[in-house]
Length: 196
Image (cartoon, rainbow, N blue to C red; front, side, top):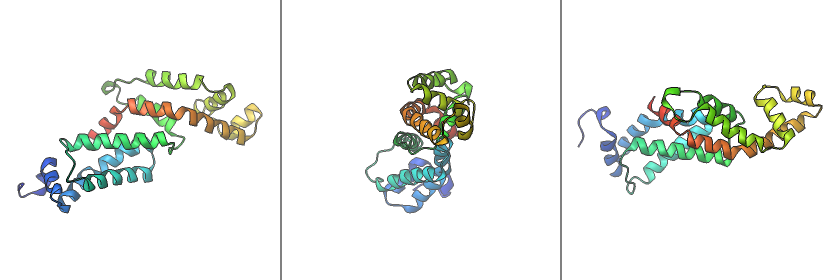
């Protein structure tokens, strides 16, 4: 049995208790990691509900599979789980449009700690953009690079706001696989957030 102060119990000790159906030990692990997991997901998705759902799903899995799972490092296990779940959400297309901006923002943070540079990110995105139809690419760049509103783009190009929205949607749909790949390659972002 671990020492008297539950707060000093290690993840390994608590996991052993969880395997014996100890709900209190599970709650302690839940409270120990919930906020870190949530922030790791939210820092990428910027979606409160989706981030909460992901954490809930991971922790539920941890409890449901408590007797059969073989976890050597809970921290590594949870970190890998959050990365996988967030990546899955991105690939499913259930993301907000602003994720494009978040990727660029994250790419320039923690310069000394990362290996994937802003140049790498932009190169991948530029390659994807170059494959878009000309008008679609022009509209998307006006929206993302020059930060023009739908109305401003419509007026500048002499087209309807609905056409602008439609073209941006098409661009995002085509860029999603690339954005997902960028997030997957930039998994270190989760690590730096998770440790912080």
